[in-house]
Image (cartoon, rainbow, N blue to C red; front, top):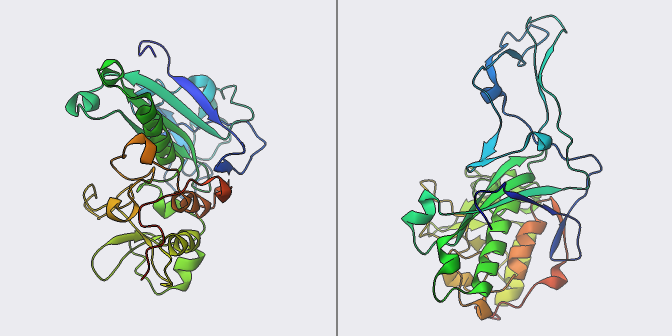
Length: 302
């Protein structure tokens, strides 16, 4: 990849793999940030144009995410309402062409960024950029660090698994998105501390856990446990100030594609517990038969 070129957009559609997006028929257009393109917003709740842009920012150019500039063709337009109560509007930027038959848009860029230079072991990193009205990510960016690509001992298999790992972060396995998951039926039925989001709770030992119906079921089966309130533990070592992590706890789920440090490529699996997590986001149709066998902790009894 050439970092001097435009980032390459990849679409993720409805395929016979571990999970697929519940399809939408309209073209995909990403939103512009009103706080960027607008100089001020009408805030009088009695005005007809309440919460609409009243003046455009002269400095606004376009949208970006994780250093990647989003093409205008992928963005909805933006308009200004010069008067608080009049319907007259001025188009600042028209709607882009949009992307037909597209559920998720991923921008991939290879570069030697500051973050890459700060950590020589880092192969890639990612972030989701926008979500739809149901909280599902519809756009994200993945940055692949250039330097490791030409280093001695570079492993194509390890890089491929890293890319899958980062893609799963973009699709929803992220501490920024856990609170947006829509299938929370089991959590709502249990007397759990939901102050950290409906799918996360802290157990009696202080361990943060993801607690959803299918995660719980998959973990019970994997560990051969009769415990009805297991919850899958999140990593402690890379947790933020809230105690949140975007990775499984390796002591329990070593070998999973979503642990913080991936094991040897032959040991890394796209496991049923991770796929069950995506099932419980409420955004995806998941084929659990595609899950790979996770050996670590398998059939461990109570």
